[in-house]
Image 1 (spheres, rainbow over the protein chains, first blue to last red):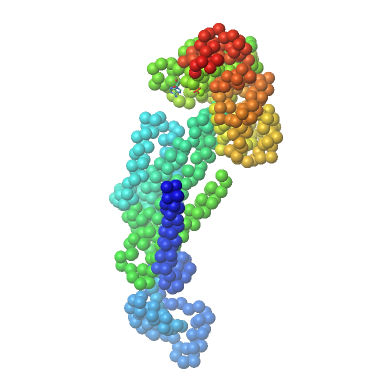
Image 2: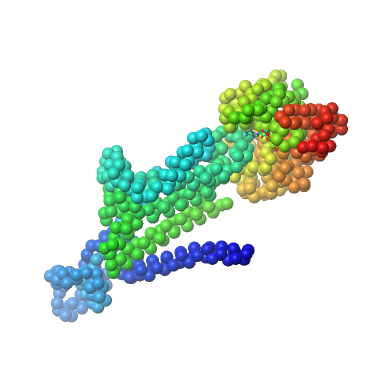
Amino acid sequence: MELFFRKIAQLSASLVFVILAATTIVLYLSAKPAIEEFGVKFLFESRWGEEEKVELSPTELSDLESLEADKGAPINDDFIEDDDDFIMDDEDFITDDDMEFGDNKSRVVYGALVPIVGTVFSTLIAMLFSVPIAMGIAVFLSEIAPGALAKPVGIAIELLASIPSIIYGMWGLFYFGPFIAGLFGGNTVSLLVAGLVLGIMVIPFMAALSRDAITTVPDMLKESAYAMGATKLEVIKDVVFPYARSGIIGSIILSFGRALGETMAVAFVIGGVYQFAGKVTDPTNSIPVVLANSFAESSGLSLSVLFYLALILFVLSFIVIASAKVYFLRKK
Amino acid sequence: MKNMMEVKDLTFTYSGASEPSLKAISLPVEKNKVTALIGPSGCGKSTLLRGMNRIHDLYPGHRYEGAINLLNADEKAYTNILDIKKEAELIRLRQRVGMIFQKPTPFPMTIFENIAYGLRLSGVKKRTELQEVVEQSLRDAALWEEAKDRLSHDARGLSGGQQQRLCIARAIALKPEVILFDEPTSALDPISTLAIEEMISVLREQYSICIVTHNMQQAARISDYTGFMYLGEMIEFDQTDTIFMKPSQKQTEDYISGRFG
Ligand SMILES: Nc1ncnc2c1ncn2[C@@H]1O[C@H](COP(=O)(O)OP(=O)(O)OP(=O)(O)O)[C@@H](O)[C@H]1O
Ligand SMILES: [Mg+2]
């Protein structure tokens, strides 16, 4: 029986790794054509779905020039224009690309920079906004509020944390966005609104988890600090937070991960346009929103591009969470 | 004035309780002596001790009646600590009346910072002064030899017995007048227990001590006075020898001889 349970437990634990590996592999394989097409440049390219004439590097250009010189036929614009018309869609373009190396051609360019920047900044705004508020709520509920108040408010927070994110999105679009636009000017859908809606969405989640971490601090430990002449603020700062540190940081990291990958709440309020937000009140885009909005109408290379984007989000979340863990939890 | 503290007719009721947990308790804590409190579980020993530094007041709604007098610094008169209303004075009281708990409670910081903590709270910033006090307190708590090379390590890496000595060092760093011990050895092994008992006998020369214990041998070994409590009342208070050799109350005799409790 003992052995049986141990085997089951081992199986469940290894399942985690299997799922992780399988996800990574599927993402990578589906993204492969796009990775081969665009390479790392994809990360720094801000255009999305625009056609461009292929620019050749100087060496390629000189090669081409000597080639053209041999032929005695100089490059002219008409010829390129013609080529543009000839390429109708992605599939054609790929075969075209394979067959005619070194010729003038155009292709559709995809770049991830706008959604990457949008994702990173909306998440940062969300975190800057939510961490202090959530910590305040957690401390209030666990250390300051009398039991008669802490219980119902605690339950309310847990309920808020379980509201589906699409509802936050709708609320953001119809009420919060216009409110923010009235306050700071700019659009009713923007990077700022997206960040704040995200922040509001993760506050209850973060507060509930942090409160749970804080309530694990033994009364006797807090009393010993009071018995040394500490004030409430000092006890919270010097004893409660350091003791509950790993739990609190864990709650922030989990919330960060949630904000980074949040789709529905952001889709309503970020604007979904492929341009950088010059001001925080401008609309922009984020990775999950691009994915959700574009899957239906994509195929071939443009679909593979979405998988590439998904892979980037995956790696981004992984790096952020792993480095946060390593950085904050390195000392016991 | 040979009493450092005097509890006078103290009646204490927990918030929401219908019956008081302490009923008209009187007890002296003599200067540079060890006063032990014994009695069966739930008789109110911790409740009494926690009144003496008003740690009860962290939670609202408890009620005190009577008086707990603490000798003023000039040793000429007493102040009733139950009259204290201001937060700052309560803090001052807790620095004068230190407390050691049932389990070791190292703060989540280094050994050095644990001991310097109380001083930092009271505004001491000079590194050399802190270092001096930390070393002296660790020496007094018989922990210096073991801890001197790891002052910058997390205090939670010490053994249970060392942690409890750290807590004592932390309390005496503040130079309190009274130290309250609530079953300080109940979570420790016999060797660590002995180390703490020896330390208490030494600390007595500088501090006035009140200790709650479940262990009657311990009370007999280390205390000068013993109070026997039962159901929230002080049944008998006398010199430890008298309590253990010829108690005047039947209940005390029964408890000492292990016939109840
Ligand atoms: N926070 C509280 N609220 C209400 N009643 C309490 C509270 N703490 C203790 N009591 C009651 O007060 C009485 C005395 O408790 P106390 O903890 O002082 O006993 P004790 O002598 O220290 O026992 P032990 O030896 O088990 O530690 C008990 O009847 C207990 O139920
Ligand atoms: Mg007790």
